[in-house]
Amino acid sequence: VGLRRGEERPGEVITLTTHYDHLGVGETVAGDSVYNGAYDNASGAALLLQVAEAFGALEERT
Image (cartoon, rainbow, N blue to C red; front, side, top):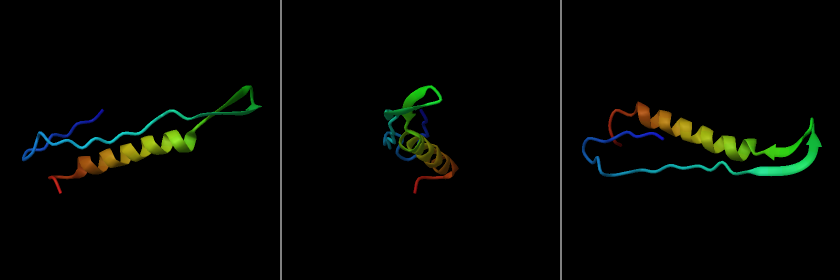
């Protein structure tokens, strides 16, 4: 969870979310048949980290 409070409009909020719920099941490989969603799960988390970094670098609201 991250928070960056503005000075001019501290009551306004932008909410960004992602989900982490993909579990595929398939042929067993190395004793594991669960295919964790690397693209589905990891891409959403990576996007939020990039957006947080970009917002953190801003000096003021644009």
